[in-house]
Amino acid sequence: MVIESIPKAAGFIYGLLAFAALAWLWYSGRFTRRRALPFLIVSVLLGFLVFAPVFPYQLQMVVLGNAAALGSPLPAAIGGLLAFIALALVFGRVICGQVCPAGAVQELMYLVPAKKRGRAESRAPVAVRAGVFIVFLVAALGLSVNLLALIGLPAFFHLAIAGVSFFVFLAIVLLSAVVYRPFCRYVCPYGALLAPAASRALYRLRRTDACIKCRKCERACPTGEADPSARLGECYLCGRCTEVCPVDGALVYGRGK
Ligand code: SF4
Ligand code: SF4
Image (cartoon, rainbow, N blue to C red):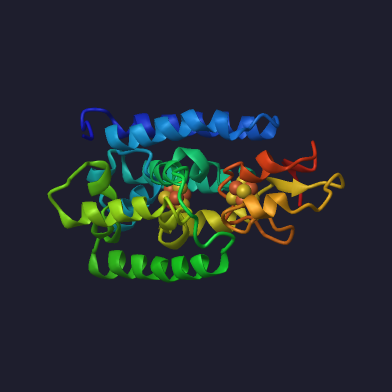
């Protein structure tokens, strides 16, 4: 289904524009899950039409040094990936929230009404993802193995149903109906780089003195990051916590801790 004649740069430009729009929605206090929904849908459609901006696969190709598959010169791809890490240092994981097609498709699947598992668990997924990141680097740099292709990330968006790998990623997507973002939280190598940046983000969700400690946000958060002591590296800016908060101004996206 991916239309190869559409330049991958179209996905990157969309990524920048969507990032700016979503960051502004958060900054201005206008972010709602309803407003974020069109971004999720467009991002997934671009994944299937352009296979961009699929950031983790771009990272995979950069580490493999495969400029041809990137659709852009290697330095430009590296610059793009670094730019979004720098943006995560300011605004948090906006691109994971609604822009990256791999994240968006899992976010949409989590809307399926099914009993949810593994909520509020953040440490184990981070530890697993750190291990996968080492395997990812060793496989790519030492053995020239494309781990994300084995997992089926490109096969899924190319609808390459003839291969086994398509069904591996399809299984991950189906799993995300019950487990929140299994690929992002347990596997994604780019997420492994974005999370430490987001945990130091200048702008972040924070509670104010208006908080009445009802803990509704903590119960709504699928990653345990609404806890006041959380560092927010695993906050996907999904908006569930702000949506359920009963007090205006108690949970805000703003500067500082
Ligand atoms: S964690 Fe990785 S796959 Fe998930 S949204 Fe972020 S970049 Fe995309
Ligand atoms: S519910 Fe959790 S993951 Fe979603 S925005 Fe709030 S703190 Fe972040």
